[in-house]
Amino acid sequence: MHPIQSIRTAVLIFVLLPLLGLLVALGLLGLHELEQQIHRRSREDIELIARSIRLPIAAAMVRDDVAAVQEALDSVFQIDQVYGAYVYNSAGEQVATSGPHDPLLERRRDARALTAEGTQGSVDQHRGREVFSFYLPLSDPAGGLVGLLQVTRDLRQFQAYLARLHWKGGITLLALAALFVTIVLVGHHRAIGRHVRTLIAAMASIGTGQMGLRVPERGPIELRQLGDGINAMVERWENSEQHLRTQREREACLERELRQSEKLAAVGRLAAGLAHELGTPLGCVAGRAQRALRTLAPADPARDELSQLLKELERIERIVRELLDFARRGPLQRRRVGLGALIQGVVARAIEASSPAPPIIEMDIAPQFAAMQLVVDPLRLEQALGNLLDNAMHAANSRVTITAALSADWLQLWVSDDGPGIAKAAEERLFEPFFTTKPVGQGTGLGLAVARTAIAEHNGTLTVESTVQAGASLRIELPASTIQQ
Image 1 (cartoon, rainbow, N blue to C red):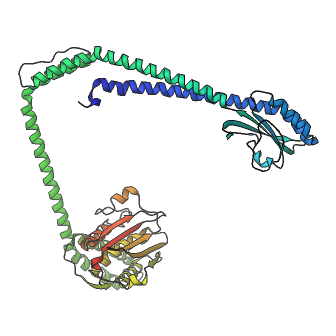
Image 2 (cartoon, rainbow, N blue to C red):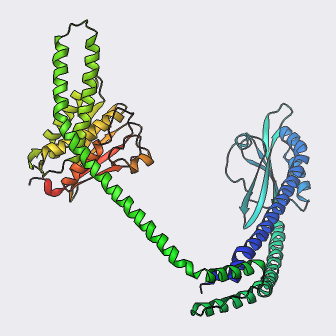
Image 3 (cartoon, helix red, strand yellow):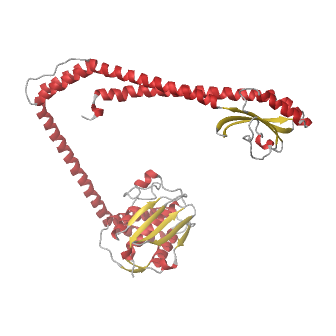
């Protein structure tokens, strides 16, 4: 039996340990608050001492009376709480000291800069001791800064007191933990443990297959309810056959749902065939509408209706073309083509088909890549690149970039834009058929699916790359075998 499966272990882990953890947390919180109060008190004491000698030292600094300054420092150094006292002029030079030499303020800097935001305090290490230093600016009657007073206090006594407090607290927590564990173990045995062992023994007898056996209903109400449930389960043994029949009916239902899914897949194939059949009639309708448009006078109101009809026909033809592209699974017609010429042709067609002000398209392709010869199906690869470029131009703010690189085994092409980028949730479904982030009526969601299919037919991959800057970047990887040596 795994230790965590024991009720006793579970009680220790999930009841006792959280209580001990809460007790430790409260103790640590109390110690922390006590430590903070002692810190504040020690700092307030040092600040009070510093302020008590501030005026006479400032007056002595105005008179340039170093002896009076030293006398004031010596008087404050007699206080047990003071570890050292130091006075600096406005240039940061030490004027007088009382206590250990080499005070904490060893760097030469202007006292005005140190106290620009008022009094300051800090805790530092000095000769192996942790001391608290309080800095107080010294001013003349006109408010001008004449120097800086530093008073320090040794924190060793405070740390020794906290160490004793921590040690005593740890001993107390250990004693409480031992007491709690003893109480839990004894209480578990008296209240639960012995009854659970009886229940386990009875269930082992029932497991041998003997009929008419029952578990004793003893112990706490939960264990009695458990025993009653086990006895009821034994009595309902004959209902298992009914459960099996229900299970078979469920499996039959799942089988029907599977056949329904297969029917939906067949409907998808039928839709592709229907799109193929619609191509010719749509072309005929578009041709007749164009001829009718040419016969109308420029001021004829029907011209707007026919123009709108032609636009909708173009959209339907584009959807039909994308459906056919998605359903196409014919063999590749490979031939030799230059990479630079192929990309330039795709870019030229994209610019021609775009809006009057298309984004700038940059081809950042080195000459050795532009002159590279590929053995691919040009139509399928142009289609894939054209779909990527169309999406990038639609998303871009002002610029689209096409780049190329060659690794040991792959030819890599990137189509990047400076648009808003792709949301993480949309990125996971980006290549699903009929999924699009474009507004209704502006996309069918087949462009990237067709592009990925075309690249896969060339044994390549199409993926989305995360970019540091805004925008999206899609990467095509074609195997080195497509490069003509």
